[in-house]
Length: 308
Image (tube, rainbow, N blue to C red; front, side, top):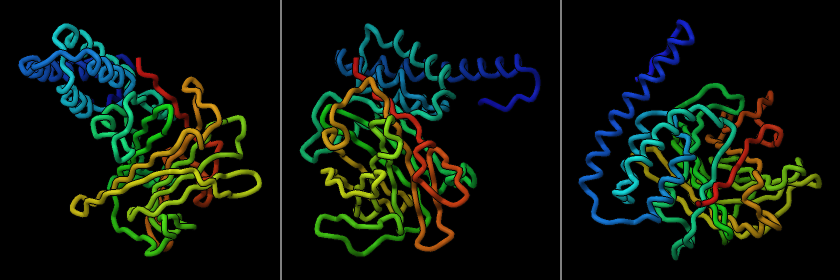
C-alpha cells in the first residue's frame, strides 16, 4: 500500500497519509465486526490491551490488523471506538521510531503453574525482529529472529521465535541442561546490562533449540558462573522450520534493586551452523571486522512499560 516516492518530500507525506487512510478504512471494517460480537464488559482487560497497543511499534498494516483481531477478547462498547481510533493513529505516526529500543510490557498476574506467561500475555508485548548479520548486512528472512519481552517485579521474561535452515546442537550437557561453550552450536542469545554505568559488566543468557542453556556474568575479571536461577523451555516446528524459546530470569539475580523507570542496555543475537562460515545475526549491529557480540557500546535500550 505504501510505495517509495522519489519526488518532492510533500509527495512522500501525501503518500503516507493515503496509507493511513487505507489502513484505517480496513480498521473500521473490522471494527464493525467486533462491535457485533460484544458479549461482555471488561474494562480492566481492555485498558491493559490498549495500553500495550499504544506503545507497541509495529511497522506495517498487516500487523496493525492482526493486533485488532487480538483485541476481540477485550471489547467494551463505551470506549472501544475512540480508543482504537487513537491507537491506529499512534501506530502509524510512530511506526518508524525507536529502532534501538525494545519495550518490555508489565504483566500484573503471576505466571502459570509452569512459571511462564500465557499466550495472551505474549501478544501484549511489541516484537523486535532482525535477520541481518553482526554488521547489519546480508539479511536472510529464512533465518529471522523475533524477540518479545515481559516483566513483573519478580521475573524478566524473554521469548525468541527463530526461523532456521539447518539445526546443529550439542548431544550432551550437565544434568540440569547447562552446557558450556553452547555458542559453538545453534543458539539464541540475550545480553542484559541492568547498570549501564558499569559498561564492562553484563549478563549473557543463551538457549539452544534442544533446550540446553548457559548463563554467564561478564565482568572485567572474566566470565563468571552466576547461578542465576533462570528457567527455560523450547518448542520446535519442523514443518515451519521454526523453533521458539522462553526464558524466565529472576529479577533478584539480575539487579539488587529493580526500578522500572531506569532503562537497561540490551542486545540480542543468533548463531546458526556448526562450522564456518556460520550465520552470526545481531539485533543491534556490533560492526566488528570479525563476528563479536561482546561490544556493549553497541547495545540498544530496554525500557519497562508500567501498566496504567
